[in-house]
Amino acid sequence: MAPEKESNGLDNYAFAVEGRFCDLPDTKNGEEVDSFVDGDSNKLAYCVTDVPPWYLCIILGIQHCLTAFGGIIAIPLILSQGLCLQHDGLSQSHLISTIFFVSGICTLLQVTFGIRLPILQGGTFTLLAPSMAMLSMPEWTCPSWTQNASLVNTTSAEFIDVWQSRMRALQGSIMVGSLFQVFVGFSGLIGLFMRFIGPLTIAPTISLIGLSLFDSAGASAGNHWGISSMTTALIILFSQYLRHISMPFPTYSKDKKLHTSRVYVFQILPVLLGITLSWLICYILTIYNVLPSDSGQYGYLARTDLKGDVISKAPWFSFPYPGQWGMPTVSLAGVVGILAGVISSMIESVGDYHACARLSGAPPPPKHAINRGIGIEGLGCLLAGAWGTGNGTTSYSENVGALGITKVGSRTVIVASGALMVVMGVFGKVGAIFTTIPSPVIGGMFMVMFGVISAAGVSNLQYADMNSSRNIFIFGFSMFSGLVIPNWILKNPKAIATGVVELDQVLQVLLTTSMFVGGFFGFILDNTIPGSKHERGILAWNKAHEDDSSNTLESGEVYNLPFGISSYLSSSSWLRYMPFCPPGVPSSLDRCGADTNSLEPKQPLGHPEPAQIIIGVAL
Image 1 (cartoon, rainbow, N blue to C red):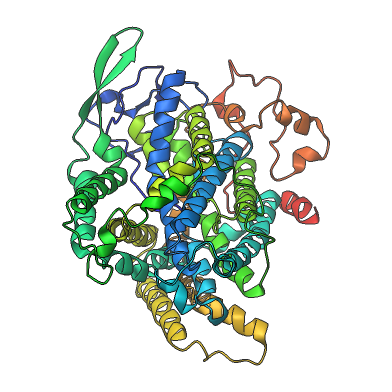
Image 2: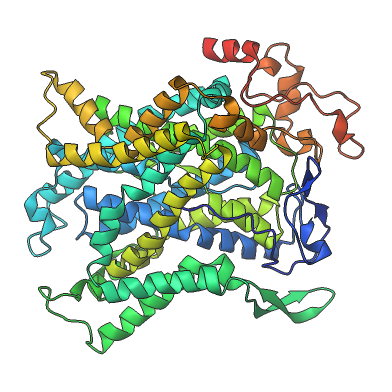
């Protein structure tokens, strides 16, 4: 899942661009989806299949990279605590470079062969919770000497083995768990999953991802509450109070030559601006020795020179490769925990696909495209595990919101963004720079980010009838159990003793993963306690995620595979029935004069064709 959920942003122009305009679907069942002051604010400058000028692709590609910046770097910085890497800035920089590199590759795969929508891929917080639960097991607890900066020799073989053995265990679990997502995607079983999972399952699952990370946020922010509070205040100021204020920026076009355009920079990059400004203030306070130089004094960790040698030691070029930390190892407990995160990630991605299609001027994604997108995401998690990011990949919701802000829905822009992330991953100095961000600044960012994740989970309750005592009980009990049980297990790690070591490890990981506990109770209670589909929110949920008829582009032009692959698959007598292959398209449908109302019959996502499921499972 993405770090934060944003509104679709259709009420503002954030980037003045020129090009052909496409209508966004603005009505559904006769009701207005959004209201606008400007009549042209419901237009797109570039649709999903358009190719903007190269300079605009680069500019907007950089913007998408910066928009995902907060979530991408937050994951390795949090993981470094469980990997015993708090005092090894150089290894942290390698992790950041690796996650940038893999995110770029996965983005290119998704846009080219997956869902084929302008959607960015990056690290996921849904896998972070089970990963931290796994690393908190007694056998993976960090040695006490790794917590003391004066005792850590980051180049010693002992220290390298300590953190790389933990990384290899994570890698193996993620790689095996991702195979399940690959199977569910390419077999078409995601539709079957969605029939039993509703808002009362998703809400506690997503909310507990943010709530379970409060300790990480508090530990980082508590190193200097003044700096962390300033960072939080700046992010809130930029993202909420100044988001409607535009700034003039010089731009160039053939018609107007050099001129100024209004850019809603505070709405586009609030996290980056907040972190950068706080980072700069910490740098100034460090130069003038306002912050203490004694490691025993409060506020020492707010200095910017603690990892000053990391940038000089980091190589200019560092090409990440599979198995760079050694041969991955697999544990049953880790795999089972990762599976809980993978299922949550798949559910979130389906919603992101529909939102992205709506904001990019594309028709709703057909079943074969959704199946392919989930399968490619699973393949991305497999690559992330092989490369050793310590995490997987998922669709980024905040970048979906940026499509509505910029009014540029072209997937070529996301291709440029993916290529830029690959380049950033190759330049080792880039990752090293990010490791010098003071811990309190990171803590201030976590305060906002984790709060938004929790609220995004609760927002799914809008589909359910929350005047129902049944729904209130299910949500309340699921949330409270997801906080109480993991907390007690962490305080009593020896309480689970079945006599079977492997079973003890599985239960330890699952019961210390808040999102699993809350989601499990939500799923069981919602599907067993009597209640109508309307009361449970299933009808409203399916209606929000089903195909509609307001197509703006011919479906095959958007979702069919490139390089003539779709034509080849459709010509085969049996391949065209595969759940991830586009169906046969009549020859009368061409790129110039296709009737968008004569597309293939729409079927709700929750009811996949039995023949497709049988063929997929057989393979």
